Length: 280
Length: 356
Image (cartoon, rainbow over the protein chains, first blue to last red):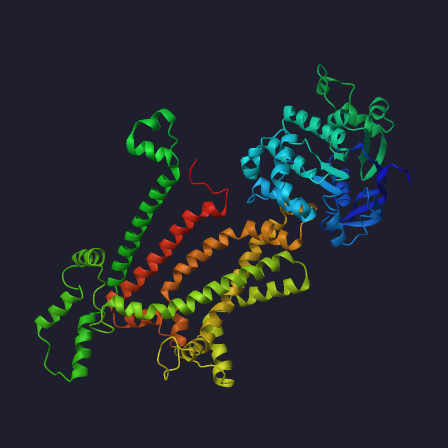
């Protein structure tokens, strides 16, 4: 075991039960997340990257199930555990304090009938009841950190824009200084200027709080801007892992190459270029 | 529906400006106007509808009087005309209608009842109302609370044996008419086992009042009719709550709540149930309004002296004043319940806004 490993995924297999038999979505993935790094997971839709994230967070729902493998988690100051073997109650005590989740902001992740402040409050009180007295200062401070006005505390989710929602979720995900934040498509469905701000703040999270991030995105541009290392998934398998610069400079797998080539560049219109084969 | 007043215009004129500054008050006034219109419309339709029933209540009434008091002579035309006038049955239909509306609105008088002449119809209704409200009101509240909780659990634990068993049982039993269940309950508990009384609202030997004995008797006599309404009610509330619950359980905010590591009970109440109980509140308000109709069949079956039984008797002898009184009460309560719910909804769900 490398000393700096926070998460070690070993031979993870996740299948979906269908009427035509089992469909493997994650097919024997080995992957290590190092403490303090930002690891990107890239791949097209259907490559299994989101299923991997959901399995890592133990949020997999039927018909999905874990067919094999282990996910060893080494939270700081606590004994190491296999996330897949833990019982629900112990897992619950680990959630948010050590293992937190940043969903896509355009999803309906916030309870529509609770004020933003209340949604901070319930997760903080659940896992850190000793901070009850600090709540009044803590939540506005978290919101300011992601560039939001503290008045947002009193707002309902439907009163926020997509970018504001994404920032609220970001502030929430680091409320209890977790060891690991799994961000699933954190910039998808946001316009490019907001995307840039979100990427900036995600980078700041790591620099200021030492949070380890796993960032799942189909967008190679996101990985190029944000992550330290990137894992490329294709048909349920990790086909390439490495330093993001290295991967971009010298992609070893042909799929990685076509992913990188699919990033549009000014002055090049792929549909006019006869030599380039279109990427599905 | 909303007219946005620009600031310059809003500062200018009296009422329009005030409404622009107080959009909620504007909405409440519009909603109240609609409510008055609905009240008038429903009462008018009911009035003409009941007058279309063939038969002459006064003739029948005179005959009954003659039989009771062995008064053999033919009643004079004046006596009949006098009664017609007293019951508001003289003149053509339209003048009867104007007369009725005048009496009800201006004099707050529903007119005398035929059922219990010369007792005013409102007294007949007021006498029956506590029985109906006590029995049906408590039964409706109980059925709603139990059904909501059971339905939430059945949805929450869907796929598990117990929850699916209860759901399937409810699908079958919610279609059993409550009077059928009432008959079975009566047969088993009153006639076979002889545990509970089958009819009336309290022990006839007791004097109504606030004695422990009387209240115990009330509960004993109310148990069978109440139970038959509650049981069937619980099943249908259970099903509708479960139906609302299941799609909410698939929402992203439930996955997120789970990722937050919240207690399952908190997720169930604050995240799942909180997002699906709103239609049930509305439905409950409407069903509360219908209580004032009385539950005709159950009250008949158990000889319960409530509004439903009174309504049936009144229709039997074409006691228009009592029929209209009970109908008006039902109309008033259904529409008022709706009005109150409409005004309360923005408080229950932050997304509901009638104004901008």
